[in-house]
Image (cartoon, rainbow, N blue to C red):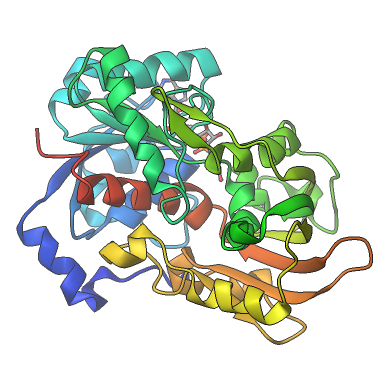
Length: 379
Ligand SMILES: NC(=O)c1ccc[n+]([C@@H]2O[C@H](COP(=O)([O-])OP(=O)(O)OC[C@H]3O[C@@H](n4cnc5c(N)ncnc54)[C@H](OP(=O)(O)O)[C@@H]3O)[C@@H](O)[C@H]2O)c1
């Protein structure tokens, strides 16, 4: 099925900003699965233009079209604007950085190598917006869902000091799984959630696969995704933390328990959630909070921001991955089946698109927020 991605031409008011700024973007890891999503999402972006693509030495020197031949994973064809870009070696940091205003990074390397690579780019004065998990727990690196914790960008000042740069820094997005349940809980923080029990049912694209690459997943469920449960339990607490003394201090509540399951779905991470509160809200109050929730991206009308962040379905059989993952260009979150629970106060289900909101789309939204707030500027 063809994806209904945000078509920026439909939003003339969002296009206007393009007149004032057209930032040059590099994609480090641009030949990979997430990198391909960046290429696609940035095609005709009103603020950003891809001018440089970097990858491993095995892709360096080839045109982008040659480098992704036989491994282009998306149903849309490769955008014309990038086909002839000659892929550079990501290790040539100074050269790549000299051609761009900022970079997105999504590379498959070990954590220490990724940390060093991203810091090397930042130290050249280049902002790095990363899909990788390597820096998610670096104390002065903001890990951001723009609707939830834009105030964490305040920590960038301390990071710049540490890295010895006045313009470069690293900002990261969290793990793709948490977008399927954390937004709904976030909208209810006033009621003080005390404990949360979640299971995530995660699509195979989260492992960089489709059914051709991974036929064993057809008609199958795998009850283990390496490292995912720890991330799903801990990262929400960092999102709900605060900035103090140039660091993010994570929140201590609620208690969160998560099981992460791989299911035979192409795209879309689904979650079942049970939650108890210190001050139990009414069902109407919960629905009102979800319906009216707006974050900084909606206030600023950022190009990739969904107009409605959380959409609640009254139908008992919604949301469904196939029907609802592409809502708002894959950037909206959907919820359903809110009801009282026997062990907890309430239970409900949630869904988010893992490679759009949960990966490249989420990172593009962070970059839009960073630009709108003055953190990314033309060099
Ligand atoms: N897939 C998802 O849904 C998803 C979601 C969230 C986060 N992530 C994270 O995003 C990152 C990329 O994931 P992916 O699925 O896109 O991986 P992938 O398809 O395997 O692509 C990896 C990219 O890294 C490049 N690379 C590999 N070794 C390199 C090296 N030594 N130096 C420079 N570049 C190198 C590859 O270049 P070549 O093509 O030249 O080999 C390619 O561009 C990972 O950290 C992953 O955990 C993935």
